[in-house]
Length: 565
Image (tube, rainbow, N blue to C red; front, side, top):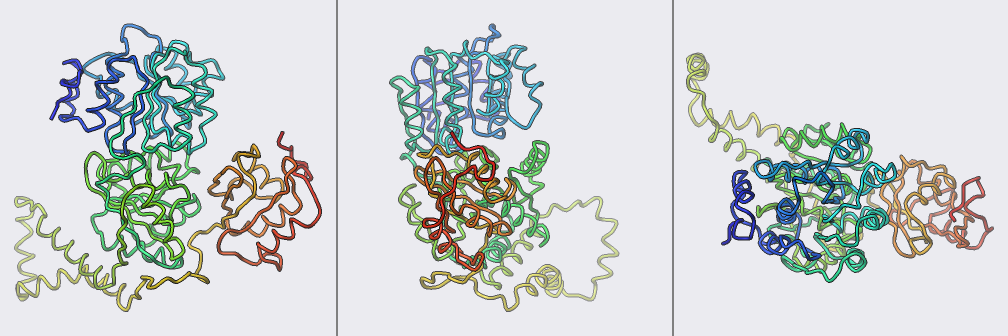
């Protein structure tokens, strides 16, 4: 097995890496570092999250950047501020005893003026999120004409988050002579298009099969009715006392709701979603990294770039619509060669999605059961006994208190003492789970009539990218046509010829009537409720959408909205 110096790193950098605990290169590092150190080839690296991609590009970058020049020589683009900050931290740790470099993080939610000052003081390496870098370019606060190396980290995530246009604009302002390194967990068409447009004869390295999941992740799924998902979640948590995990929800509304319910029920949980400001996000993430928070409930977008060690479980309250999202969700566990478990809570009608994911990521899901009440009680009891067995006794300080304790317990035998001690914890769970129902679904029930787990309704609209529709346009339409503001809108998925969006239940009834007779770019708008159809104004969503097609013609600006041009 090679060490880092054998890969071609200078002794100074190899020693610096060893000092911070890196001894043996991971497969992506072993393959990428020798190629990147030449500094003369575009490069594509495909590997799952948690496999050491930051060091794979970061170490060669540090070798190639000239510390004697204050010009900005390297640009690293990352999808989220969390990942950007993690990259900066890693690069600073790698270079601390090797080179004196000014590495600046540029990201939204923090003072832009302070970031501008840091860049103008001379940043040899800039690590940026696309949106904030566009802001700096607009203010002419950053000069990309001196860039020699561009790294696109988690390229698939950036494109999933809608940064395609920002990436295009950023790359167009960099020199044609630059060297581009692209790292991604998956290789969808959009990532391939970036490589085709901006890279010249790149060398491509794949660790594992393309679009596959981490082999160290145990993929499981549990079939329950939608109405029972929260109860099933609690059973899973209670059955896993030592869990340090992430729970994914589709919308920020569900995320906040699940986190609040868990905290109310006594779990050590918190939430991470788009409504939090930067200070709140930083506080939540610090508590999670320090394990002050045991369970973090998050949306897909908010959790992107989270790089926290030793996450044991990822739990999906629903299956994401985009298969790549599942890969990134589950990739938060089993990092750096460790084992992890990914559990999807699915309704009977979602089982088909599990089969799709199996084909996409080339892995097998094992169906497991919601633990029964007695199983949870036994697991909790054994966990308590393990704590007792492993507890460190402070002999010196407890000695003075023991005579009184012995006196109080002198008439209790050893076996009775063990039973009574165990009952302190056992009785609480026994009371809660006594006569607990079986939550598992047997057979192929279609789950009709079950309560929706989500607090929002999901709608189909027959507009998409081919109509030049983007998320901002759809939000504007919802506001102007239906009176539904951004804060009531959940996840939006813009597809080619159609899209999906979610709206809080309290505003759902306004959607189908609001789009009645609306045109967009000369196209009749059709909206349908995709699941959990409800009566609206005496007519079902499906019936209302059908009447849309045959009744009066309207247009997007009939209520004073500015029409898309």
